[in-house]
Image 1: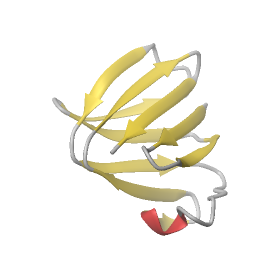
Image 2: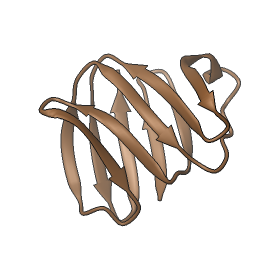
Image 3: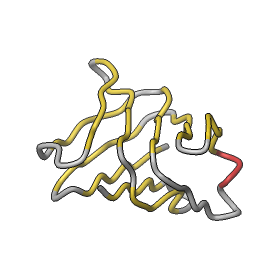
Length: 93
């Protein structure tokens, strides 16, 4: 599935991922390939991204924390997520 993370300043990430875990207001949840459509509000916390490879824009690479070759995390203050047609869009603050 495609994940796109957008902040007010820039697009932080756009690429193919295997899963993304998000800090929802009612608890953390994970989205996998072919997940049902969903819209949710996010609270302060950690977005966990799993992908076979990562290609970050140099200007925003310092915002991500490398866990290992296939996992990165990103701290957010709040946001919104939409999953539709195998594309996840995260609007993050």
